[in-house]
Image (cartoon, rainbow, N blue to C red):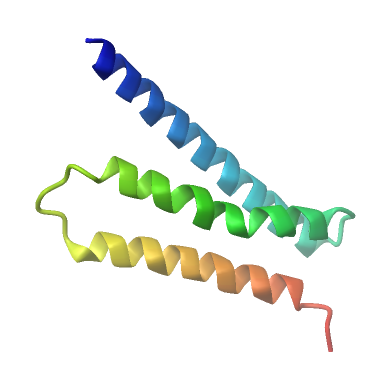
Length: 96
């Protein structure tokens, strides 16, 4: 019983941290689009957070799934790659 409660606590905590990471990333994109001050600092912290936090959360939450399609992993990788490319495009927007 104690182990189940601990796993549920960790599971909820990981999802909360993932939500915060994506909120920082989206806020950074908004600041960059609107040319508000602080966009660079938010981008520096916001770009690596989904890679550092979301991928381990995804792997942790799907560790016991036996018949998972590779399409799920490809979808996660595509989403993270899209986020990285979009962030680079935002940071290079005013250059050149």
